[in-house]
Length: 451
Image 1 (cartoon, rainbow, N blue to C red):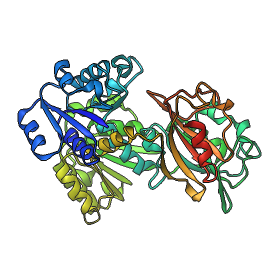
Image 2: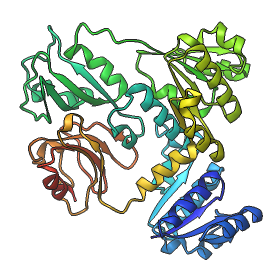
Image 3: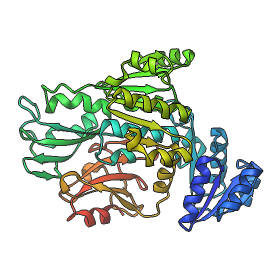
Image 4: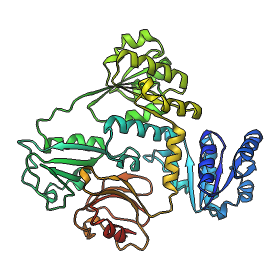
């Protein structure tokens, strides 16, 4: 594939290296002469020194012939303008890196649609998704990667007094009423993919997919006496990563405290997130950590912009007895070392925005029409991510009108700008991406249906 990248910083240079190693035809555009020279010397790619938002420079890079255009500079405005120009000049697929949440918030204005950009990637948000996965569902289903944190996976046991007992999934109407989908049912020693006629029984364990608030509201139907165990989380730093993480941990069971040494940022965050306890203090101080009883926390997340502070606070919280420690690392040379010595340092996970962005880009530009995300729990089949072909007979149909093979369920749907758990009335559009749970026997039929 022909790929044009603008911006040879941490993320752009890493993407260039990864893609050229995979035998893609890569052209790098970089405004800084020293960086451009460094890339030209170190990597087997074509390098153009110039302004990536200049139509003249983009024409020299032949963006009109490229399969993928990646705007990876540290300037949001440059990335948006460059991607928009590249799209109008003929780039088949455009991906823009952004930092400001304003550009991905479609509630007031859809920047992505206005600029004609195919994918917006926020490295801090992708990092937060990785951290949230470790807190929300450690070691569980990979669908959260696909949905960029907007969909959570929970398992609930059907207990006595539940309104769902004796009712079919069709009668419960979960998808349309609550935006929740049952993906798997574990009944005694058997795990299976349910269908609309599956009757819920006492003792069943359901694997549910939905946004965090919907899952919280629906728990009473299945486990009326359940009192969710509170998870105590301490965040260090009022960074964009932690702000996104707070949004992802919207479930009331997560009790969040945030430590920030800038008093002005403390006031802003306290007004913005009234349910979060914001503490003005420097977590690099052992005295502050002891005063805040960090050792009693279930999770400590260090996500400031200073890697050295993040590492030192994690070492101190390990000593104080915090159960799980998660770390945000920006510098690539630090990231590899930390991951090699995680067990020694007592760190559960170290996440790099560069790596998170690279993984998402590589997944996005994957030319195959489907991929296997993970085995389904209980060995019941596979969790598949499928791009719906323009020739699929499902295009333009509501999900309720699609004749899915038995033992198959759609648990997530990504339209161009949003990820949802689909209901029966949602319509499948060409180029949508869906996540399907299917048994091994039905896998080929499902792929044929959508691709």
